[in-house]
Image (cartoon, rainbow, N blue to C red; front, side, top):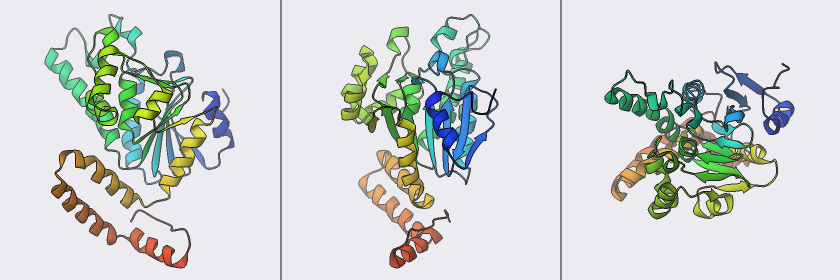
Length: 296
């Protein structure tokens, strides 16, 4: 196999033309990981199964998210899927197997053990992704379903191909939702629409998803990754210190009063004002040049 032959076509085109591209070892070909400049790119690579989560892919995804969060080379993260789907969620076909371990389930495990196992998996994937300290973009070439939709919702932004769609998918197999679906979805589309999507299993196509704020941008043609990289590069040019604090301010505001949010903003702004990045930003503004932020 030649270098990059394992990469699906539209990413491969860009990989082959990119400079400063680094491929990282993930321990499995079901998950690909690259650094382009200062942008991390994670690719769910099970196109034959619509990138459904597996016992091999999911642990690697958790680990790579954690690694990128502390990798100083990376200022923004893109998560995408191989082929014509983002992620179909859990592998329904494997659930039909007697050896299936959906949510950690096995005949020898107690219900308490199974619940604790799934809770830990959710915290180390969706929770960590939602609280990722750098900007995150989900690049959706197609369907985002079930836990796959939850992963996309945990990202800061969702860019989608015009053929992409979102679907909860749980009702059809008599499940109830996982990986943060019931918390993330209503915060983006509202309670009523979230109930509609989950209870009726309705499919939301790209045009409606854009109007709901479920998708932030819909991209025509084969320019999805290019558009994501362009936006990620814009974001990555700002101070990592400021971006991290901005994300935390916004996300923590759900659980704070206005007074508490004002107090937190004051703390974060004063701390940022003492950073080298702030000093560099002021110098660059005065000197009419692009600032060179270092995250210090």
